[in-house]
Image (cartoon, rainbow, N blue to C red):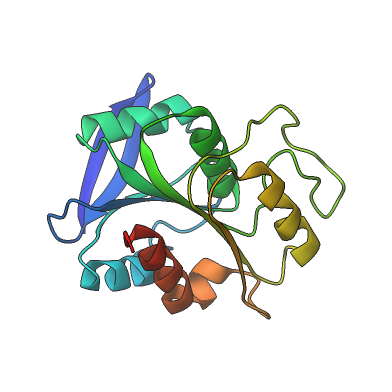
Length: 188
């Protein structure tokens, strides 16, 4: 993987860029505290499907504007957006509030910000609906009812994929996650 430092929002973001020079790129946003290589096994599978990957090494302290700046600096105007944990929260918000930059949304273990989580907390009651084809991958850390309720805030094709027994889907189920990403990147 190529390691790149991109100036964004007054600071630096470290990103890992890899894969074929393809017209399809996937932006991977990790959870807070995830190791820098958390998406490596997923990325390897995506490269085999002719997808370029851009993985932020850390989401800590990275704003939504900084993520958009990273895409601008890398000259990526259209990407498929993937997020896990805190990265999924950013992904939902970016997809809901940014028009014309994202082709699809794949989130792991986080319902839409306007839906109450397992603790009854609503992260952003004013977050608008998403108008992108969306897949919500559910491991053992998110109730299926919360995932299904997110469908009210997706004004496009919406799927919930349940992977029982996987608390950390990115690390434990890289093949299943990569499959869901590839399905969203295919125009059929």
